[in-house]
Length: 629
Image 1 (cartoon, rainbow, N blue to C red):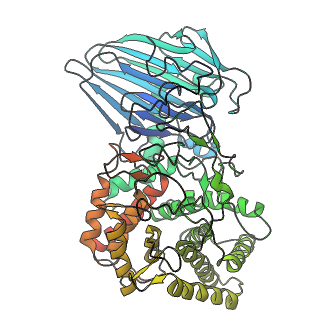
Image 2 (cartoon, rainbow, N blue to C red):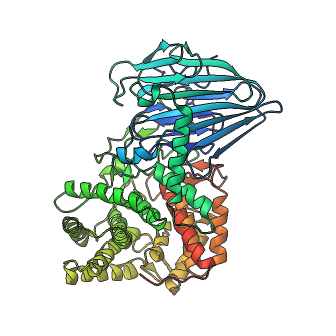
Image 3 (cartoon, rainbow, N blue to C red):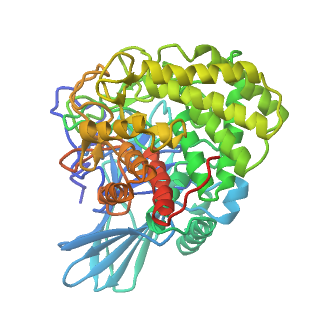
């Protein structure tokens, strides 16, 4: 009865000489569920293959997506020979439905993490997964196998029966996740195989079985109220979706992106993480496998911009409050860290987890070494978000403006310094166009905000710095030979982050210099419709392996084309990129030329770039020409 995907996973000390084990299910063959505290990836085969607990940046308890042999999984599926599986979200929710079909029987598996309207105010007490399987047509036998692996599969545990419907999993020794015990409760009788919970049971047509997996103190355990929890969760998500002010032609994909961004936000702190996973390789050979379960100032600020466009001022306010706390704690010079953990602390040191071999020849990494880098572009994203929140949300406070002024003065002093930039180069800093561009945005948005709100500011100094950055970009980063803006001075290296120039209103979208740059990027970095971050096969970042097209760059490219008046071209790029979404509308960080999903999944930056491109295409196709503001 043991699940072959995890049958050896309870071995406490896997030999490091074992051959690497790759995941048997593609990264993008999953849907994501969550409750704004943690998330879980559910495969089309009915298995939870990735889940961190109790928080999204806690250690994994299921990690089969990285290592199907040792990582652990929670599988529920019928025993009949499956002819087809289909997976979908219930409309305008993050409730996932997986359907298993054969010629004689059909069953449905509903997966969700309970949330309710009350949780919005109380910050949510429930933190568990609920799984409901229902026989829709015909009678069937169902198999369940729950195999948690604590602390990135580095820890051992014991399974014990509490009663016939409950199994307790107790970790042995020190447990970095701070979990005393996990329990699996069910409406059917459970057994133990090794230290896993197992069951095989019969369902007649119309019957259901319910499973609840979470902490031993989980308040929902008592009566196992699966039906009510499902109803409350559906109501919560549909009420949230109904708040959207977007009603354009791309509403379905825009709202799926918005629902993902909400899943990646924290109810407790207001932080917004970059992605819910770590260790997903960015190259076919398994390299470049970073941990994205943290809040990058840049990505989170861009997320605020996307959510504000959809009318979600509350999420922008929560992030504004979170960043205000970071500002209070930042260095006296006004500088920020590149990234933070969800609770505002520094991410842990980067380390390899050799109990999870990943899908390449090297184990995945947890923590992130980029935390100690200098990335000057983050300040532009942050000031743009603050400016927009003041425009569409609430006015900045006196204390808040003092903190902003301190940070702007820091950028005014440091903008000429080399840094690692948006692509987080691991081989040293250099002067980068995108970083200079976003330093310009920092000064520009601060000046605009001060003028619009009549706030005190050293206008003469700030204007002088803004003008100096503007001049530096045109003189140092323009290559007249190739008629394009370039990544670094005196080079011919193209960089897709240059696509942000018209998007942040630094340059007119039809400026002759921009139009030739746009063509150069499309010709040099594009493989229809994929846009690579910089020249493929280049060793600019000091890392081996050839990565895929960067999904966010493709949406930036589509938007830039639309803004340039090449609306049909931009629309075609956008529509082609929609085909790279997985079956439930989620995007990985990168896409190989072969179409394989690469990198952490799903990624916030891709989805917020999609939202921005959809807005611009709506305007362009509708003949709208909004004023410069």
